[in-house]
Image (cartoon, rainbow over all chains, first blue to last red):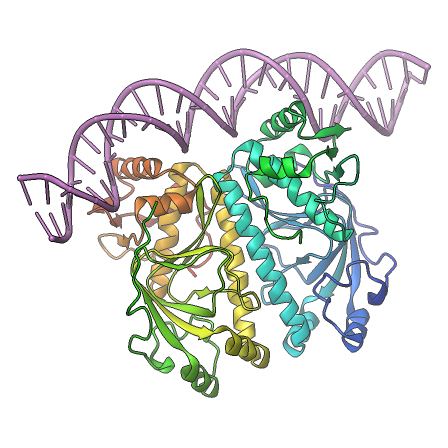
Length: 258
Length: 258
DNA sequence: CGTGGTATTGAAAGGTATCAAAGCACGTGG
DNA sequence: CCACGTGCTTTGATACCTTTCAATACCACG
């Protein structure tokens, strides 16, 4: 179990960046806003910062804000009475956190790495949603993307072997990080792409529906078979991306990297 | 593999019901419409009917309409190259089919039972979405519900045993069918509630991430342990709903039946 | 009464979980 | 500078659950 560190100070109001200069400006819920909308958001937003391992919210609690992930990684997870847990969502920069219209959190939210959130108090944001079709339309689109991602994960959890799960996870991480850098992961830059794992083996296990031992074993197996190389525990080098995709069990033409 | 029956006639334009008399009027995407909106929908909607086993759409194909399920059950599924398939969504009456803004189907859509769809051509519906916040707001809410349902399924596929999967599936079916009848499944009506299984064992296996043999074995085991009784192959009687919920591994207080 | 689709049951194989121990990296304090 | 503790990771041996392969049973229908 990850221990919950109690930190009271400095979790709010670090220095603030104007929306126009925001790193996630063109991918977040505010992506399709125009200048006037941005002014309104700028006025009401505030930042929250969490350290790796901290709890952002617990299932069943009220959450008085919704937010965009600016940097870092957050995990949504569900826990059964006997302690089994399954991560049901991974929030990377630009992803949206919280459900408009429902103040009670449905999942535990944890900072998997140091995390910066751009927050809006619930009520004003919901008003904005109602009055601004650019924002509500964007949110619908993002929610539909989340749904597609969740459904892709259903296939992974329901039908893939442990080895395929690990490979799929690496492919997805590669695609998402490449998307943030606007690069194409299939364009192998000379000596292979490298992927920074923002999760412990235990968090990966929770996400992939495995145990941490199995995660470790399969990573070792992929290394032995030279599908990947490791530098340290958290840095993965992929010499042949197509090979990794083949190991993931997905179609080679899984669409453009989103 | 389910064989695809080719049927060309009678799959469109059966007799049509006015929206005001529609059985799913208060749960579908049109739920929050007012009289004026309904007139507009009434004018442009049309029905499609499918027989059990028929294919509604294939992943990658263009789908020229979006639709609400009026009656029957449809399944969304994904298939890997080697034939492994996972059902990623079960569409019951009032559920919405299709993604506004994306004409290419992401999943195979199959009629699991005889199926009646209330369809709208894509373009006019998307126009309506943009112009009518009642419809777009309702669609956002339904999509968020779908996302929650998918995430509940992630927990099931990732962490539950075969026995728990079957029990969970029965609980969900009981809740959904009770919701359509506006009844509470915890209110046991004398001799236990009964659940009509609208799926073959194979379809259940695809949904639950199991093999059909395991589904069959676990149903037999639940029968031996007197958690359920069977009348025929497709009718399940649950004498003690709380007992079934306990077998599902979920919290007893999993919220009100939605 | 046979036929095809569907469902049940059995025996054996296989993959992942579980339990247990050891290795590694890093920071703290002697 | 090194010993030591802690958290994370790797590796090993075994147990268990689900799959796989195979045979049989059930049921509606022609």
